[in-house]
Amino acid sequence: MEGLILAPNDKAKDRLKMKRRETSHARTHKTFPTLLIGKLMIVALALAIVIWLSFRAVLPTRSTATTHNSPTPTPSQDTIRFATNAETPVAGAKEVQVTLAEFSVKSTAKDFHTGIPYYFVITNSGQQVHEFMIMPVKPDGSPEPPGVQYNAKLIEIEQIAPGSTVYINFVFLPSKAGRYEIACQMRGHYQAGMKLPIVVTR
Ligand SMILES: [Cu+2]
Image (cartoon, rainbow, N blue to C red):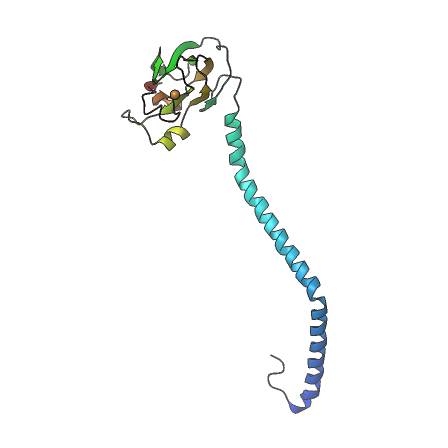
């Protein structure tokens, strides 16, 4: 606010101030490139921190997905099983034979109970590659939307070659009681009939 209303005898002082201000302005001009680089560095640093933080926020989800993708050697107490290799039956496991073909799913058991270890022996007796999935259906038995089915799947064994057999131990958790389908979700296979309703009770 200084300098808005000036007494005449203040004019000299004011001129002096102006001069000083000019000098400091010139000084600012001299250091301007340095200041600009400094500011840019701060902005870049802030950006780097923001990017790093957002990556950290995304990473835990990713690592969870990776964990689920890696086959577990022990019988599952978890909700999702991924396995492509052979397993031997755990003690007391009930064997269930599943046969995949074009385009059908057959199983020696359709009624399952929670808390019991099942040993699935899954054979692809067809000419094409198939997969073994256990995915939920609605309480009335109609399929959930594909996204819901896929996200809530209990087991997924992909890429079962023609003529090969895969083995997996699985325990249905009590919280997972409900209606499911053994299905193959390879392109068009589910629609062509590769689904079998099963029921899991407590
Ligand atoms: Cu299939």
